[in-house]
Image 1 (cartoon, rainbow over the protein chains, first blue to last red):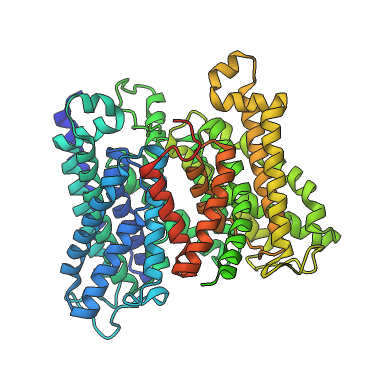
Image 2: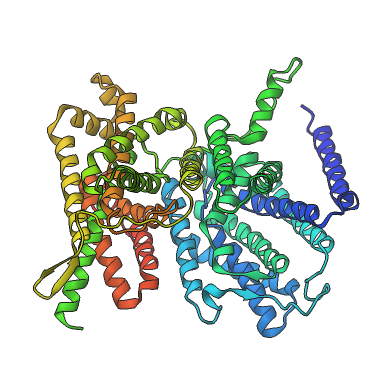
Length: 338
Length: 288
């Protein structure tokens, strides 16, 4: 296989996709539909960020909401108390989340598989309880962003369109970071840690150091997504940014598309958010439970029938088509044992 | 703080701890036998509560009387879940296994909401109601009976695992699956049995607390995280460990809530999980 033409074809495909994303709001002008596109981009951004630690390095975090919440609360508190622009606030949130990731990863990365996943759930749940009971952060009441301001400085807009381009930009940034990691020696180490941890250790790769790098970068990007959520919703409370359901959704997006690959989480977000939003509008979310049933059925089906996600499923199909190349790259499967 | 209050706190911790133990023994049994963490375990408890509720609402059967029925029903649910979903993911990656049982959790909650509405329901006028007083210490009779029932069921499970042929076969599968298969034990059958018994234990816990705890589709979320803590503290796969750990977690939760504030009691229990994972990941009685 000639990698040169392959990667330039990939490049052209990415450029075309980006161009399409940039002009898409010209065709989709209805605010609710633009909101739907924004939700997809937000989901994709979270999924790509999670994939760095959960996919490439194979460390399954089910507590990513802790970073999301830290990002949302940091930028919002800085805006409310110091009047600091969320452009800097989001970076600050990213740094706080990265520092938190270092502190949390140092002890937790001694754990493997189920144990690591459980520890991350516990950390996020504890954080949610602490924030819920913090008077300084308005506890369970939550924080409102200023309703009387708007513009690029405070990153608050009356229309959906600016939000669309901001989150598109953040997604592109996240994908670029992820892509750079995938291509660099760090990416090789991540995959080595995931697939052959003992061999990697024997070759002198510091497992903990590279796991920490993965978690820290992932936390930084996830926190920026959290800051964006606060700007878009203009209201945050512990339940909307720190809940375990958000952690699960973040991981689910990556898994649904195909873990360990750059395009997986983007595809996962398109599918998951579409199903989530449509089942909500079709069946209503007012406690009938139908949207939950559909959502759950989908999770189970993917878990049972396609452990390598939709991309893996597509790969399987392609291999069965006539004239398929035998060396088509298989989607990476998650294989971790405690 | 007087001794009376402390004693009162410890008794309520013990009572709730025994319930936690019963929820956790099923979870730890499933994990021990097949290395799968069941995120839907709290939903088995929820189904047990609804079984009691409907037995009471439709046929005027008291929750305590309905317990055998609840156990049978949940045993069937556990086996069905195993045969339809779990059997297919035995060899799947860990992430798929987590998400299969996680999806199951949302599915069961969704179904409960769909059929039975999200309302909180209560069972009034159970056979067991009112308070019991032991000197200065007072507690509810329903709580006391539930704790007693939890001890009985956990004890019966222990007897089953250690004193019957079938139970020993289940234990053997948990200790060494391949060796057990070589001895002629049908692994698939044991797995299904573990899910049936695990679900029945959670369902019985649900039936026991239905006399005093509100019943609603998401009630399982109150128990699942605590059950994880109990399983980790007791040692993954150890029924005896889960029993001891359940009592310890109940005591720490109530004592912590009393000393620090009730809003922090779950945070305290989850901190315990982190401490155990970091200091002694195999728990009290887990395999090294």
